[in-house]
Each structure stands twice: as structure tokens, then as C-alpha cells.
Length: 144
Image (cartoon, rainbow, N blue to C red; front, side, top):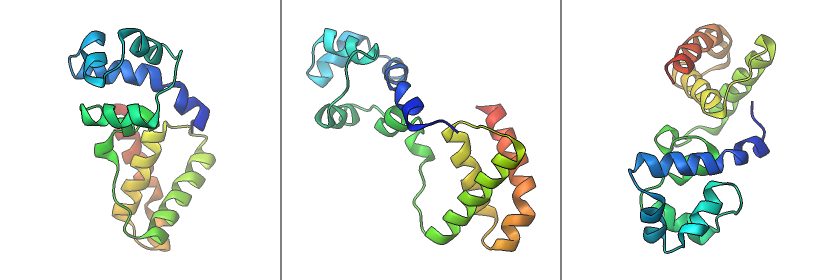
């Protein structure tokens, strides 16, 4: 799994990616954000960091700030209804990854947790279904 520092290292490249997905030039996005072209260039080239105020503006112009900061698309973020079951699913996936020597991206890790959470709601199901979930997670990783 990636460390927090590794996730943060990807912010500048994800900013470029998001801007391009919106079909905006650097000048266009800078204008919408109320910042200079040079400031946006520094953000995209890891020369500067965004403030909370700027992140709020980015969200308002259509940038997926969850993806920008965490590397996980906001449409992949689910509401947690049952903390205990989510915790058991996360623990089971973590243990299985360690046992299998896997090192997935954070997005793949959480897909695996969501798969397991959606399919298994008790401890015996978690143990029984982990192999199937790992297989499905591998299929998801191959698609992305």
C-alpha cells in the first residue's frame, strides 16, 4: 500500500490530469480559479501547494478534490453505515494482502474492502469469501 507521502507526491500530476479531463488549458483553469497562470504552473509542477481556499475553488469549478488529494475518485467513496463490519472487512483485506505479498494502490485496496463489505457481513463470511474477493479485486485492478 502507498504511504501518505507517496499519495501526496501524486497531487501535481493528478491536477494536470483533472484539468485535461475538463478540457481546460492552464490559462482557462487559472482564470476560473482566480489565480495566475504562473501559480497554476507551480501547482502542476510540484513547486507550490494549494490552500484550503484554493481547493474549495477547485471543487466549485468541477475538479474532483477527493481524487486530487487522495488518488481515489469521489464516485468511489461510499458512505460508511456499519463501522464494525467495515473495520472487519478492512482488516481481512489487509491480512490477505500481507499474506499474499500484494501491494495494491489505495484505490484498489478500498475497492477490495468495498467488495468484501458488500458480500460478507459476518466473520465466517469474511474468512470464507476472502479468496473470491481477492480474485474479483484482481479483475478490477486489471480493468483500471
